[in-house]
Image (cartoon, rainbow, N blue to C red; front, side, top):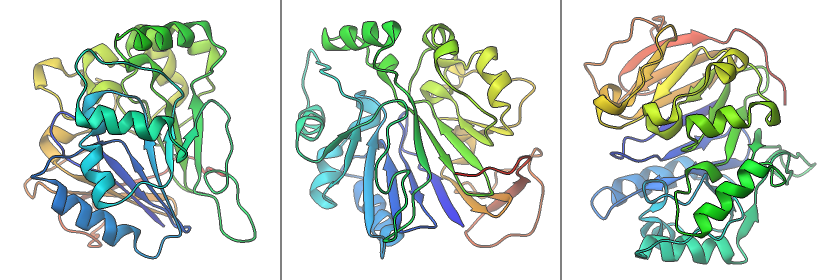
Length: 298
């Protein structure tokens, strides 16, 4: 069993994975002095007893690394997974300064398509793999190189986002897309390997600007698309697909157990007809479940 949580942190992203192995992963952050104490308390509780803790930065956008200096001070980051970049900002912040220190420091592990690392996706006699794999970026790809240069010139870092896939052996798979934009995803369709995936977190918090192209959706064939927190007028709702919308659900906790995913939310009045009721009570506010359509192996 593993647990994935998408934290409701306003118009930003923050996730963690409590792996069934000795791994604990945080993906992006958007913390403030107000929400930090509760989040750090939860992260410490969930990571207690884990031997490997990593922070994965999908890309250097403020709502994906907001307050990272606060998090790093409260819960020091020893393994910082990051796309190699030289992104710049017109107006630097404490968060961007700390991001750059981590990005360029000795704690950084540069991620790219197909990269491998103990115990990210390599097991050993000592401990098991976390089940994480990096599908993008392809550092030799011309479109990625152009996006990288644009970010270095102070432009948007959205299209240097990493694509991260987590797989529970014989269970569900989950995909993160950062803030990739629709046109960029269309351009790299033939350069990224996509396979059927149980849960996909919609790009750019579910905004229409990050609508996942039909060419990707056909390959991913997701059972659930999670639409993040952004103003409703900016969202794309993926008609024809089952969705969970964080604006309505609040925190979303996913219990991955065998061939099931059980969903729990922080909004006690949330209801979702796309989910099947199985009377679960591991966490508060059970919302429903899905059965994984295909078995997955690492």
